[in-house]
Image 1 (tube, one colour):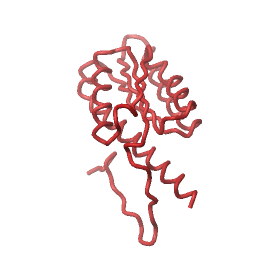
Image 2 (cartoon, one colour):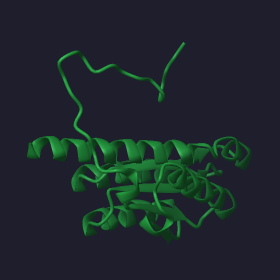
Image 3 (tube, one colour):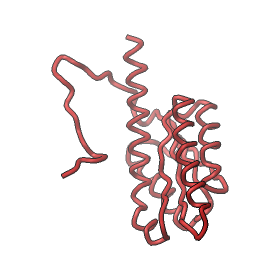
Length: 167
């Protein structure tokens, strides 16, 4: 049985975790692709709902719309570079077609989003569905909530690390 994505670890005795700022103080950007908008709208609605469930107030959530998945990395990177957001969540849906276009878009989107996070030091979460058909996308709408969880967990970790370094 796997605990992929939901596993827990115990902090070894004698070690500590530094407290981080509360979630209500966290600003999060959500960048959503307009391409395949029927699917992405559900991802966006789910992501915002999950952020609110985690205590992020709506006025601390910035939503940015871009044409397609190809544009997600650049927008996420600019938001991360601009400052003011502790995390960025990228949402999109790339459906395989009859040409190799799918592979290029999906691969470069994933690489670009990872690079945006690495180069800016701001967590950029991957909420982009890469699927064979719309039915598969519908079955994976919950991935938006997983991306939000990852973004918040990493932002919390980075806040804890900053707080720990100041002590």
